[in-house]
Amino acid sequence: MQPSHIVLIITDDAEFATDLIRRWRAERGVPRLTVVGSEVMDSPINDACDLAIVGPVAQPLRAALLGQLDGVGKPVICLAESPEQVHSHKEEHPRVIVLQRNEGWVETVVLLSRECLKRIDLSGRLRRAEQAAGSHLQDATLGRYMLDARHDFNNALTSVLGNAELLLMHDACLTGQVRDQLQTIHEMALHMHAVMHRFSSMAMELRSHSTSQVETQELSHAAVAGS
Image (cartoon, rainbow, N blue to C red):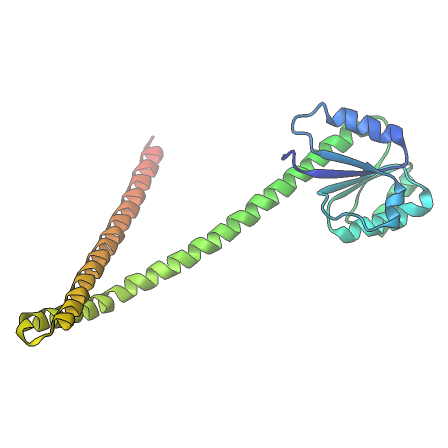
């Protein structure tokens, strides 16, 4: 769980907030805890929070408050005072986690909140992994295209080199500037040839490494099966 997480505690009961914060600070990796009262209804709730915990607030405001939090799309934990309130809140706001406030509620809320924040961390890592996988797929597609096109590129490069060398053999007919330009074309073509040669060597090395890994895994599996 990252300490950069922001947990919004909404309550009109100072003791509720104090008990919750005291218990949470006994944990490792305490998030940023922000306490506000029901006056938060007078302004839009900051959707920058990662988790909201709703404690005792004025009853007429509770339903509107839960509706507003539900629209933010972040995890919400609500403490209700009776089984009837639990049932009512769950029916009206099925995405809100509703718990009855009874003995041991502080422990339950902190542990449940930590699991919610861990899930947020996991979702973030998964999203970044999917983005990285998409980027790697694009690189792999480009690499396959380069492998497919290298023969045509080499053929064209051979033609450029051959013609440049033929022209340079008759340099007596060339002016100094034209000769210099041909020499530059020839040198750059040789450089591109070296680059393509290295590209082909890397492709062979990667293919050989991949084959070796497969053979090693097969031998390992065979050894495990035979033991």
